[in-house]
Amino acid sequence: MKVSAGKLKGRKILCRVSKDGTLRPTSSKVRESIFNIIGERIKESVFVDLYAGTGAVGIEAMSRGAKTVFFIEADKKKADAIEQTLSGCGCRPRAIILKKKAKSFIKSAVSEGIAFDIVFLDPPYYSDELETILPVLAETKVLNEDALVIAEHLTKNTLPDEVGCLSKKKTYKYGDTTLTLYRKVG
Image 1: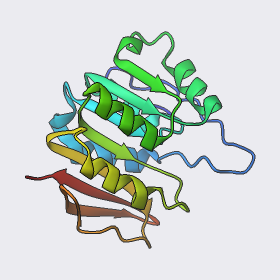
Image 2: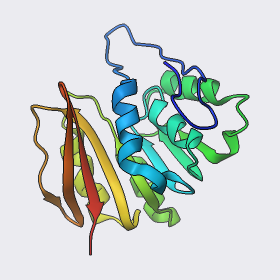
Image 3: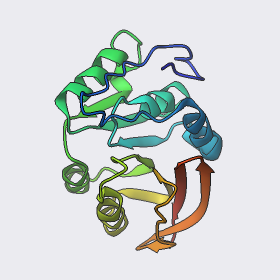
C-alpha cells in the first residue's frame, strides 16, 4: 500500500496482516473517497484515526495537510508499524501514536480538553464497536463545532440516522464497504 496524494505521495505503508487475518486495511479506492468527502476541511484539521490498524487513513490525512493526527491502535505491533512507517518522513511531530483502546482514548481526551475536527472510525467489521463508540463520541466534548465523523463498516450494517449530537448526512457504498458520514449539529 502507498499514500495516494499530498506531501507523502508514493510512500509505502507497512501492512502486516496478522495470522488470523483480522487486519483489513482500508482500500486505496475507499481512502481516496474519504478524502474526496472531506475535501479542503483536512487542511490544518485535528484528525483522529480511531482503530488505526495500518495507519493508512491517518497517514493520508497528514500527507494532505492535517495539522495533527492521532493514531489510536490498541495492538502494540500495529502501533509500532505505524511508528516505523512515519519514521524519517519529517512529519512525525504532527503524529500522536497511542497504544490505547478507543473508549479509553476518548475519556483521556475529555480530561485533557482535546477536541477534534474529523474522526475516522474503522473498527473490526464483525464487532459491535461502532454501536459502542458512536454514543461515546456524541456524548462527550471531544468534537469541535461542525466536526465530521466518518464510519467505515459492512454495507449490510445500517447505522442510525442520529446518535446524540451526530446527524447522518450521507452514506457511500463501495461493494461490501460503506462509509457513513455524520456531522456534529447543535
